[in-house]
Length: 508
Image 1 (cartoon, rainbow, N blue to C red):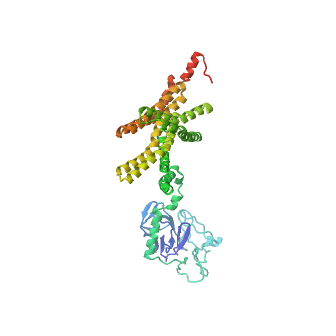
Image 2 (image 1 turned 135 degrees about the horizontal axis):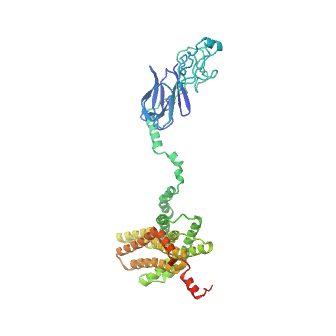
Image 3 (image 1 turned 90 degrees about the vertical axis):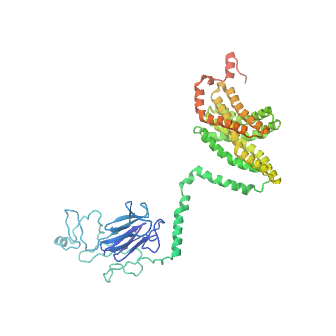
């Protein structure tokens, strides 16, 4: 018999020349392939005049060494990829019928299989022969499916898995004509509706691979995980705070929601050198705690005694608030220098300054958003669309921009504090200059908002603040290099120089 052996997905099947072999994803095929990319009725094999003929049926295609094939005469062992060049592989191995001549290597002895020549009679065996490359190798004598000794008759095929109890194996007593090999019970062919549902389920698995998503290592990337809370938090705010009667709650919630995004933006803009990590984290936490406490104890009390509508009052408010943000930067920088003899890069101090500013802005926004909500409510009560829109825009401004404004002013002041701590000769002047620049910009902003209605000069003032901040983010490293090379900024501070020149020493 011209037997065909088919191997796919770790299973091996045997078929005889009287059978038609069907391959596909459907369970009623002779060779079932589980890959969802394979067609339900993918291909079939049948015995023809020239041997086993492979014919592709499915739309997914079949590939031989990367090239698509639709029909193929299986003259020897061949591996075919289903659905794509990298799809599941089905191996086809046509076996030589018993009694066929064995072809040996050129120059070697040749004899028909089962010949009874003198040498064979003397030795009691068929002369050994080395088969051609690619030719199937007969199993060893005595093993299942091995050819019988001379005169014992042709070899029978090895029974595959699935022979039921009581079924006679090949080679048992009975007629020697072709016998179909029994298989496991095959479920009945599905109807058209069931087949359509099965195809839809397979398409869904391909297009929406939830299982592969859940096991994808990309979930370990922090940025991808950060998207989840930022998409869900506004809905969580609605669920948690819808019944709250405290008007500061929305200001706290949404200001804290926006502040980390500004922090990421400032980090990317300033590009401080690789940090130690734990040390900078502890300094940042200390700055946040300082600003929150100092605002509650000192800043709010001082501001309540000042009149921001006058230019002098606005300047005093500006200095009061910028000192609130600058003090923790100065204390942290001096403590690190004196206690650990460590100097951080000025860009790191600039970034930490923006953290102080964001903290100040979040705390302040929680108060100002109360006025914005009251304005929205008043507009709704008096059917004034203009008042309601102004209140909504004011709320958005405080939530989205208040922390950003304070952060860029504090970042400029912190840049000069970092230069002053690292290069002490002009320490006092550098600190005063940085804080004054931030305080003046801050004061003009508050004074203009309190006295004028046109927004355009205010927008120009904000653009000037942004220009200074972005300029220092771009040139911080080059400015520090020039300061390091200039004797004007190196050495002891001018206060220390004065005592050294007069022979005096500062008192403790």
